[in-house]
Length: 398
Image (tube, rainbow, N blue to C red):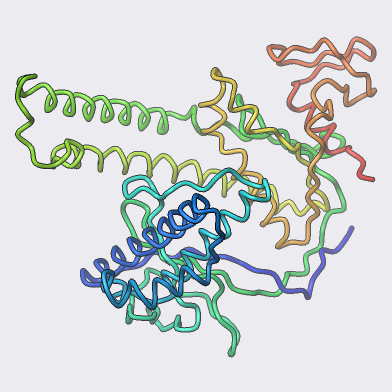
C-alpha cells in the first residue's frame, strides 16, 4: 500500500453557470466582441509589419490602441473593461510565439460566426458574494451555485466568461491543498478504442472493466438523426432562397442569405443539437474517468496515441473524433494529479496489442480486423483490447 503525495498545493478549475440580466448580457456580448477584435487586430498588425520588414511587439500594439484608437475612431472600447483588450492581445502574441517555435500551427483570424465566444475578467476586481460575484464594469452577477471559497489575500486565477450557445458561464481556477490518499499500490492499463471507449485492467486481469462507446447508445443515435434532418432542412431553405429569383436579376435581399431570419432560426436549432451531443459525450467521459481514478491505483498507464495521424484515415476519422481521446487523456491526467497518482504514457510504437500478456510472444501478423488474440505459443485466448490493457498495466518504466 502506498500513499499519494499530500500537503502540496495544486490548481483546481470550476465552471459556473451565470444568470445575467438583459443589460449584463448585452455587456457580455460587447466584451466578447472586443476580445475577438483585439485578437484579430494584433494578428493583422503583425502581418503588415512582416510585409514592411519590421517587428512589432505586444506592448506597442496595446499602447497604440489605448493612446490613439480608443481616443479617436474606436471610442466604443471604453465601454468594456481595459483588461479584455489587454488579455486578447496577449493571447494573440502567445499564439504567434508558439507558431514561430514550431509548437502549433499558424494562428487564424477569429470569425464572428465560428470562434468561441469568451472574454477575460480582471482577477483583482472579481469578488465572491453569497449568490454570485462582483466584476469590473459588470457589477453584481447572479450564479446558479456559489463560487468556491479561497483563502484571504488570494485571488481567483485566469477568470473567463464564455457562452456555449445557450448559457453564459464563469470559469475560474483556484489553489487547493493536495489530498493525502491511501493508494492500492497496483498499476492499471487503459487501452482506448473505437469499438469500446476504453478497456481498463490491472496487472493480472482480476479487475477489469469495459467502458462502452456512448455514440452507439440509442439516445445519441436519435439525436444524431435529428441533427442530420435539421442540417438538411437548413440546406433546403438556403437553396430555396437562392433559386427564388431569376438568374438575370439581382437578389431582392439587402443582407447575405445566411443572415435571413428563417435560416438563422434553423442554424440555432442545429447549434443546440451539437451542444446537447457534446454535453452527453463530455458527461460520460467525466463519469468514466472519475470512476477509474477513484479505484486509487498507484499508477495509470496509457498509450501515447498519434491522434492527428489516426484522423487522416477517412474511414475512422469521424468515429475517432466522437470518442474524444484527447479529452479523455486530459481528464485522467488532472484527476490523477488530485490523488497523487502517477500517469505514464507509453511510446506509440510499443506493441501492446501484438504482445501476448501471458508469455510475452509478439504476434507480428495480427490484423486490425482480428478482435480476439490467440497466442500461437502458449495458446491463451482473450479479447485483443483486454490483452493490450494487461500489457500496459505490466509496463515497466525506466
